[in-house]
Image (cartoon, rainbow, N blue to C red; front, top):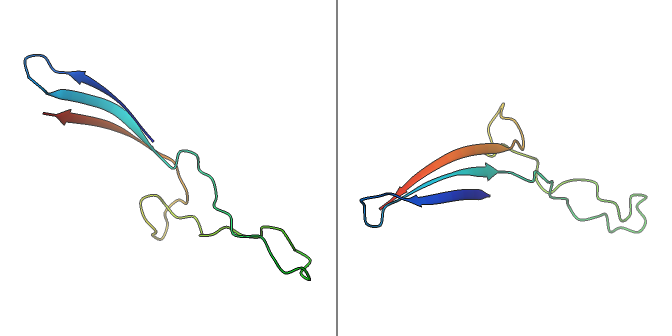
Length: 79
């Protein structure tokens, strides 16, 4: 999710400066797998796992925190 505010720069025709904030993994919710569909299984109709193991938003690497939220300040100059 990104929130930006653009303002015009005086004395330049179409130049704009944008200042904002970006949120990565804002809602931080798991993606669940399908429920067990074997009627003879005692866990029938229960969700027992997630689709993928959580990884870092910066990539899947050893020692990285899993599913962390990241907030980033942003500045853009459009001309």
